Length: 319
Length: 292
Image (cartoon, rainbow over all chains, first blue to last red; front, side, top):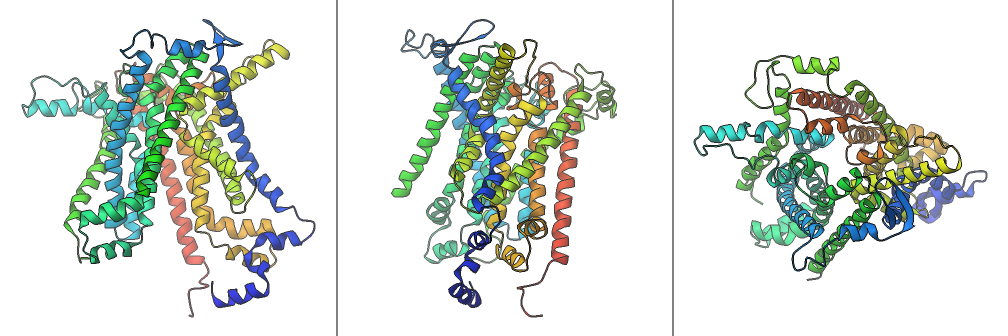
């Protein structure tokens, strides 16, 4: 605030501090809180009608009964008991739902570590090595444009590369490294992880980049001047300051992979079971309460992971 | 710090270039493959060059009526874009003041972004089914369904585009200088005039960005549409259906066509943003930039 403004504020605080007080002083105007409701109300209504109430319905319907062709609005735990069928009887072996969640968590962990690694270094390069603002914007845009194009197309795009007669296999055969085409390249866990990384590293890059550009460059210079090596600066200065971005990016990637059924379906050749796939299968069989029960379980586990992650990060902050 | 480029720059530059290649390489491969000759298969090498598969797409000899799906997706995308822009700008303005329920709206938006899409989609489909059942039993026995492109489908897409719109608005107003509005008010502008002639022209490039997000996110949306779109299909849903059945390059041709629309919209939006920024730089006031 420059001097003239300071003087003005002393003379008449209302004028500088803001709109609300001056506007309220004039009669025959809509009150500011009413205007805020008018402005924010429509969006709130959309979230209420198409997100919050539907979530409530998911929870309610998960406790309804069902038969082959319709919903029966009567209390029943069948959605849940069907889901956990055999889980106690088969102990110590894991039941189907247990195995499915274990597989989903494994995919989740793999995708998370890979996207974090790639996302961190891409963001680091953009934030610290690209000096010109124009270049920074151009290169960020280059990373963003694929995000604006279709996910399914970006999945299909791997077929000519990874298929039995694809570029990778024919390349490997030509060089003599293999005699027969490798089968596990496409419609396998490998291709699912590859496609998920391909699609969603963007969600890691953006928040980490955002945290990194806010880091005061003089802090890094200070670390160098105090004799820190590049590695020490990275671990003790840059990573702690980029942590909010890392956490936000991780939450994005983990929740996407936990609920994914399209990438796992298309890239897994509809053969791999996952948490989101169960819901889709139940829905295709029109077993809505069972689908809703699975949705509630998925929501609970996703929420648990997010809470745990923010805890771990906070504990480290304390140390 | 050392002068000149450190070694890490070159290592990371190569890493970055590899990432960009990883991002674009496969996509370019299918664009090229959709121009195969009539005998072409799903993989390289190319079997002649022609526009056979793209032409076939427009003749509509495929299994599904792609033309209708194309028009539906386009309509939905445009409506989603318009609604997203209006609601995001309005809500963004509201967030500049404190108001009650502010944190409820904020957390709803964040939750809507991170709750797995299939759950939102399932919830919307349940909601509409229950409404349908109520209408059937109390009003009209012959009622079919209230689910559709511009009811449940629109709602499902908005739960995905509005959070992005709101977050972009936060970013815009973080950089916005409120003294410009005060100046307008001091000169006697009404709140509407202030918004129309001062705020809107300044934030317009970013508002176009919100429109770009709104349209492209809707145009490519799949997970939320899957259960909530009702009896009809959008283009991405048809495309996903084709992935399991098609063995010919039509699927690449369709992919190329959908991407062409995306790229056209991206180019148009970025071009407009660039033009507006240039105009703002050229015609904008030089106030506060020092004595001439």
